[in-house]
Length: 310
Image (cartoon, rainbow, N blue to C red; front, side, top):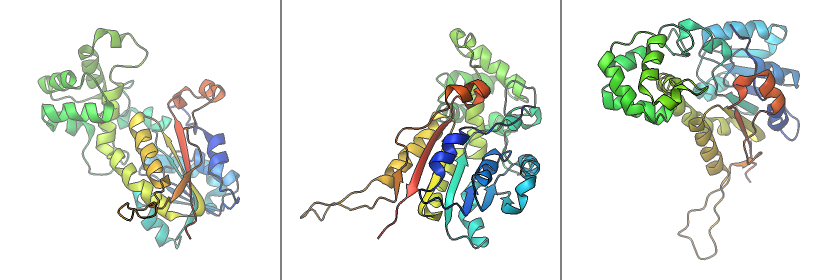
């Protein structure tokens, strides 16, 4: 199993550290193996409240963070719940929040989790494997053909969505990652079978997003995170595909927009900006990081700072 390498650590630390240097309380909404939490602790964070749904990831993170575990509280919850859990701890505001939306290497490389087409395994794909929520296998074998096609197109931007959905319905039940990957490969246009990107990549992405309701969680969590920040606090989000990054970009721009009605134009609804964009263009990995960690190639970092409202 591959060692997990946290992505964009240097720019994350540089851009997420509040301008006044205060870093008493930090939330890591996506703990994973603990790489970003460890980096924040080494950068001077006083306490970190970390979230993850994956029990296996939490156990690994506990070992990684063992020297500093007294400064870390780990909650097996979705980052959507960050406000409620923070309030339970008596945290009404925090200095920084991190959301690293990507899958970890350990999740991808564990055949039993079903996230990757490279390994034969069950079609599970749940972040919380003990949760009784629907699995990828159940979606594949129960959704009507049109709904399956819509799922592949909406969450995977898969152009051959309808052909793939039709082939799946004709061959159901589909029981394993290998079976699904092989089927998709036979359906997509021949030119796509010759590229470095596996033809089933977008289908697997779409199923994982649907199973874990990832986009809905992100939409809910962004305003909650901004609300939790103190004035001057910063929110950093690392996205790994265009669907996530579009949501973050759009929401950050909305939160940073200010509308002031000109004199005599009372009909225009005014709006205060809640944040400022720390970086207007997303930060991508540099060549050095890409050479040491090729899986970081699609990572994009965006950061905002909460404004002080008079």
